[in-house]
Length: 336
Image (cartoon, rainbow, N blue to C red; front, side):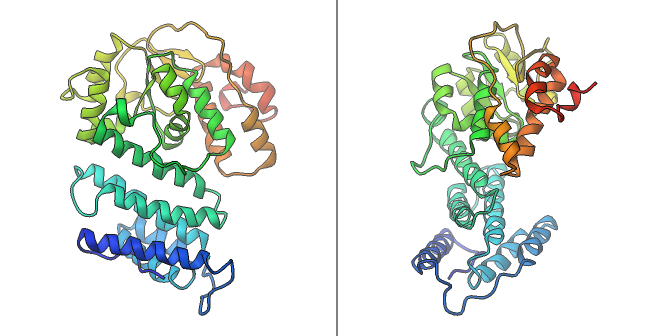
């Protein structure tokens, strides 16, 4: 159907993407029937590709998956690995100063197409990583157009919906930062959950910042410094120190404290804030997480729980809310 990993000009990568999409269309057009000559799934291919990538041979891993998926297109784990590798390529493009062919958006097109197949084949993490591909696309949009235009918006109307307990996490994180605050986000999961609640981002004028990206990507730094009204030449800690004189800074549970300025941080719900905040009418909701925990329906429950557990390390008041919900498995910080 297609062969991934073609090296060369931008036109070569675009041809590769067309072949990839054409192959997927052929597969879907088969009406769910196995294609003539289709090989059996080899459960060793996806782990082999992952091992190659870890050893620094990502392009070799992509080539391996491309040749394999051309004959075994029903291997969801292989599609998922292929999507991950293209997502990594897109992030490397940022680190390399947005130089090189293809550009980050084309890598994300590759990633999204592969993740779509992983979702179709019921790979548990497929939908989350499909969302991460769109989140990465939004970063490119912000870097191109600025936060006011590209920030709290979704690029594609068919952006997949996230599991409800991840959306619930985003709502809880946003309600833990006052209106007009700057929210320092530490993990992909936190960033994804917040971005999906874009209506709340808009209405409350909260500005989410990835300090790691701010420190390493000059274009992202320039655009976000513009949104905060500060000098983009300032290093991340000095930049945030400047912002703190005008806006409340909020640290998510996974945020790197080393990137934050030395301020009198105070716990507030799931975050730590740079100045006192008055409690509002919003309350933390754990209903969706509790239901997902009981159903055992997703591997991402553990990662979401880790965010809440980390928050309890900084805010002992959360224990009174967490103990009735989590029962015999409260956060470590809440155990006797």
